[in-house]
Image (cartoon, rainbow, N blue to C red; front, side, top):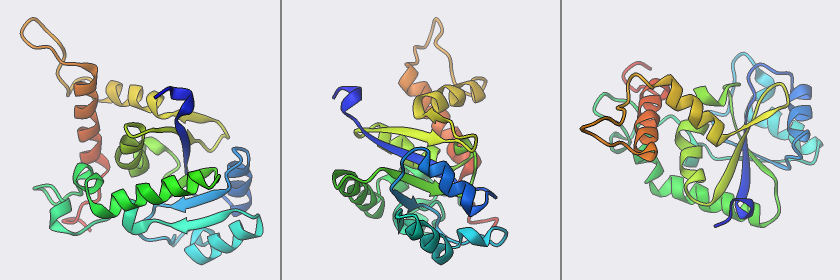
Length: 205
């Protein structure tokens, strides 16, 4: 599949922005639908991003809102989706029926012509499961992913993957005289390390 033919999905974090700035931010990328990937669509410190308030604000700007907390959320307590240390295992989540149904619904929205952004709370996508869990799957299954930043620029998922490899360079093996590691293998190991660093921990709730 040619890269130019891939479907494009955006991601964004609301952080502590005003609702006015957030709407301005997503409008600068012509977003017409927000898919909320927070497991709990509420913010104690930023009530403008509570589900009902956010939905109303977006609808006033003719932007659709959907909540995919079950499909794409980061907080899981089902033992089948946890690692041996009680942390959410992103790989197991990506294989779940709910996650895959979320991908199907995302495809349907894109086919209907919506310009979609996944939304979570963290400003930096590198610190969020929308990169380490969701985007990982999307870029390997027919999507382009661009991450919107609060300064109204964006980075590609590939750029974040370069950052990922640099962050964990001392923890992932390098090719040497005795072992050959492909870039794909090293990248997957780096993703697993990121999973452990950002995953929801059911033992320390």
